[in-house]
Image (cartoon, rainbow, N blue to C red; front, side):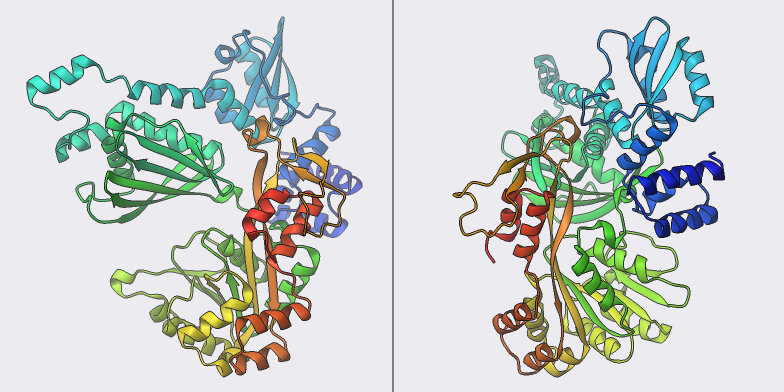
Length: 577
């Protein structure tokens, strides 16, 4: 463990590099004293400094070379037998990667080059002198999988799934057993789902999805094939699928993991399970639906270690952050976040709670499902099958003396009414709606049945948001926007960026997502319009006149900053103001 003096030297170096200020440093040191750990880890955990920035500065401090995946430096030398020198499991467990060997000298990428015990163990294991270089843990893990062939293992498993020999089919015909294209009996289906090749194939499908930062896995049956797709940064990508005859065993294996009824194939089912990659717990929510060709499975992957619940890190600009913080500092009122499924509403809500939580405040939430567990906050999972709905839980919440309430989603009149009444009686209420923009949320609430006078009295703000893909910082290309490309588009920047693709981003050109948003603050003029049942077009017009930045304008700002491409910004906002 680093000593306090080293913490201060690292902190001073980070301040000198302009990566944090004195106030942030003091906050991090206070957190480190309270929770333990190293200063660098605390700064990354708090979202103050990015992991790659921290490691680069740490490399300077220790005089150790910094290697990154995007530059191609984390690519081990070929034909040196490095994979035999350091076994895969040892490399993954300790976050190390052998890069090259010269006589008895071995260069190794490490996330912690100060771990002298590990360096000594490596020397004993390889009979070499260890020359450490530093890299981020996430880059090393990705490079390990590329080098040791996790993706290749999945490809081999998929290729092997097509090897149904004529002898196997002939044997099935003579014994009267089901062929791969036929329905299996329940006992045989369970047996096949537990076979080593099927278990290995499912494990590899999930593991590769996690390694490639996928948020969803889709396994879909069609007439003569299976479709396997990963959703990465909001876009679906085709992956080479297993053979059609393994559809039933694969689906059954996943249903067994998620504790679903494998005998039920006619009705949709939902379940969940958890996997662990090193110290990272990954929650996987499973949904199955019946299609004409069999069951389709969708798996939602939630890696809590990769989610930063910090308003400063979500993509809001300084003016938007100021507006949000002004709204959430009010002692009572109703704040809605709107947008389609997958637009980051829940993450923003949790980031708000993370910022305003305090021992002096009683915070309760009702959610479906509870996606992140936060200390100091009372979180409730709805269970409609036993009568625990949003509305019934909210009625009980009012007897719990809450200061702040979070309602996962307003779906009906009763829930909406309780939210409004709670806001009118001195609570701050946060919730979500599925609308395309902020002004439309007012019309939606009135359509549900909320009286305009109650709505105008309780509403504080409506925040609408979307997610755009972030350009990969290692390979994005600057170019002068052409007149034809930016026709009717007002851009202040002469140079904008486009996606290229490299090893760091799996050749997609994008890495991660950030939010774009429009924030409608309810002033007296807007409240009067709501009381008069004005149309959402009129509300939008007045909100814009009062300075509301639209989603389209927010997206163009991200283009001008070089955060995203014009193509992606226009695809998310439909290219219209």
